[in-house]
Image 1 (cartoon, one colour):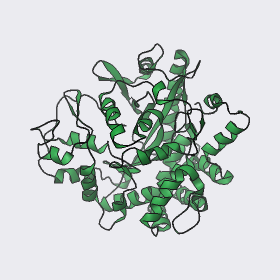
Image 2: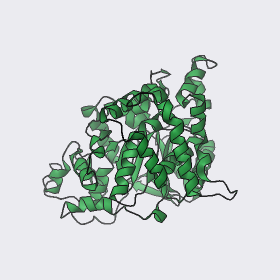
Image 3: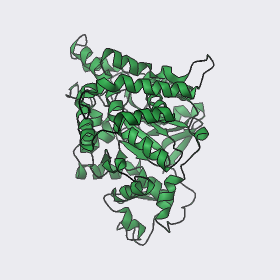
Image 4: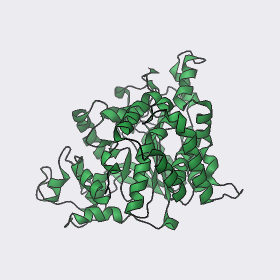
Amino acid sequence: MSTKTENAKVSAPIEDRQQLIDYFAGGEKPKERWRIGTEHEKFVFATDDFHAPSYTEQGGIRDLLDGLTAYGWKPVLEGDNVIALSGPDGTVSLEPAGQLELSGAPLENLHETCNETGRHLEQVKQVGERLGINFLGLGMWPDKTRAELPIMPKGRYAIMLRHMPRVGNLGLDMMLRTCTIQVNLDYASEADMAQKFRVGLALQPLATALFANSPFTEGKPNGFLSFRSNIWSDTDPARTGMLPFVFEDGFGYERYAEYALDVPMYFVYRDGKYIDAAGQSFRDFLKGELPAYPGHKPTMDDWADHLSTAFPEVRLKTFLEMRGADGGRWGRICALPALWVGLLYDQGALDAAWDLVKGWSMEGREELRSSVPKLALDAPLPGGGTLKDIAGEVLDIAAAGLNARARLNASGDNESGFLDPLREVVRTGKVPAQVLLDRFNGDWGGDISRVYEEARF
């Protein structure tokens, strides 16, 4: 989730609804300026007893953030608490129960992206060794109950924690017990955005399947391969889902703005504090009639904040966010941007990917999305077959896109090698969760604590 920093001043109020639409147009960039922004979250655990450290305990989350400042990271404060760090490699921030996130800098190629990830992981591991903590690359806490998890001192999280149980049964699990990898990508025009959005939504279930890595809840198999993905189906229907309107003729910035206006608000941020506006309407805010903040109109900063509180499978800001993958270890953090850059950043690959999915019915897309958390690559495709039948072809399209980009490292390698972890999944037919389940039911003898050695960074 986004980290809000304290601004020196509040921007001017929105005067015209067209400004909301123009916000998206402002993200347009020529192809030579397209960048890759990779985000990944990981669980923090104490190495002696595997508990999730609190913010304030000795060797806990606050000490972790403080330790990272030795590498040039600058503290970001909310009140008296350090709740994030900023630096050349982007932002380090906290999820609600202390999951640690790197929101990476916008980079030109995947070699830079993977180097950035490597630097960050080396830093947190070095600090962690001194503090007695380590990091886990999974999509969901494998053994923790909600009650066992700490809460980080961030104002927006307090509002969300109160609101989530009003609108769904699993929203608290989303906040407290999950981790993800996502990639943020650019677009050249409204038409380019629309095509990338459609391909991203249609193939997001494949990404979910390939990265499925959350088969345990509270120490036992939960019946899913990506329980993290299933959680989104019962979090808040007003702000999640597959967005059928994206596939309709005429989809563009205006239609997404209309959708976002109908997403209920969480908060307004003023003077370093969060005002609880959960469930209220941004449309009322535009009229100066927001019950939580009467007589005031929103600014473009408020619009940007509000857009960050919608949680569809693909999200539009001034870039597109691909949001379907479970958390995982280093190679998988590099593999997710490789998949989407390969599919979306070369026109030939983008057209080939769209040709593969454009005939799918919306009903079929929804069925695929709902079945993939349990079935992963065995989920049924619209029109017949399973995801397993197209997974190799999609990876070939992505590889062709990466080959066409011809971004080489010092050894002369292009970016397609970052797809290798996904090719291994297709070759074996087993997603990461299935490998973990085999071990849980095999040599682990049902001992979930063994996952802390298996899935740590």
